[in-house]
Image (cartoon, rainbow, N blue to C red; front, side, top):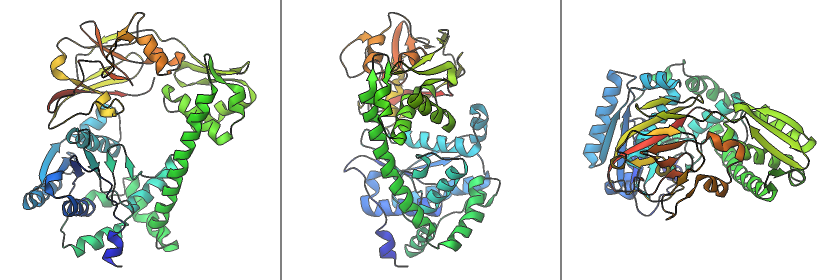
Length: 443
């Protein structure tokens, strides 16, 4: 196996400027990735992030020490986060692996706060194959067949086309040391069982199985993007004042119709495969369907409509990091320091949408549902308008508007779920304390 041929598989598609935040666990994959990025971009553009999950005791301390020494020897900036993942997983009712992943990406995002900053993670082709198999075992839809995306938002995964064997080959070629995570051998984790039992069998069928999966998922990702474009075009053509035009929907290919309904019904929360099948059947043949969250779909008189039992409005003071809401969801507000943030006023940036300037929040925040007469001044728009009009412009279905959350401080709406911060309350400075908002659960 030629190292030059393997190196050609590495994909460098980072912007011309901005910090590259690289997740550095100390394992072979992340050590190689950091080495390659240093070689190409230099230490001045990189910022390594290491997360101690509070799971592996002395072994985790060993990993952190290795990472610190690695970065110090290369003059590389490093931020180390310590998080008690077992405690957070219990509080959030998440699995350990799922919670650890969320924690890592939260930490990466804190450092990559600038508008042109990017995040590099060291996922490889074997990781992609494991993800595809997991999705298949769980009954994946088209999204699951795409595997791990090579890039999404700020995220970049330069090593995604390299197999684990190729990663180790390059590590040895460059004389790199690394540390091994002993939990990777524990079969209590589903992914480890796939890695230790299933992938070797599949490589027995095709020694280049990971490479075959890479080709497959790349093709599926292209088709998935095309399908999403077709679905959104169908929704635009079908929109009416009362819902969606059934004659327009019925003229579409069944696959496009199903994807369009998935997008249209997304505000209700994640729907099952069976719900989407039955919704599509209603669109074609007429009828009705009860959906989660007290919603109902009706396909009658040439119009598909979604109605929802109007939930009782609520207003809850936010007095702690986590606030249970009457609709079953949970509000999580974290106070974080952003260093060299250089936040871009790009309202499509998810992190920007969910961050407020700590210094501007002087009273006790209240999380609530909308009320008649609510007005809002969206950041960067230079206007104040009724919330009802704003929802009309955003084409939020009428049946779903009463579930949208608003954060109010001293009588002023300072943030709206899915819309972002109000003018004067956005965290648009280069460095400082921010409030980061997360909503967990489904209505």
